[in-house]
Image (cartoon, rainbow, N blue to C red; front, side, top):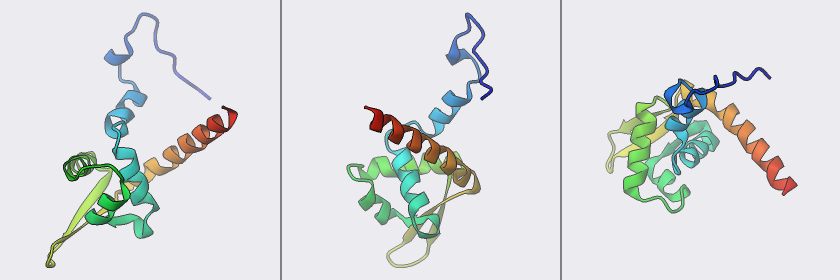
Length: 117
């Protein structure tokens, strides 16, 4: 594994750290569960109401905020169907799909660590 060490005396928050960049995209409490449920869904697509039911404890306001941020970061896409009532679906984008293997690796690592404890 080739890890680039931080130069001595340099502040990690003042550099272009890939981990910190990733955390700005997915580091909030609700974003990972949202991405995980969409990735786990059939065709990697879920309707808004399905997400609202699956992500237990999230408010409608916070779900909407997170979905907008994930869409702005191009991790998910939003499709609105002109039905009555309106139907909105969220899917992983190609960028979002490339994130899933990394999340699976973190999941496996955490599972191993939990077994050790």
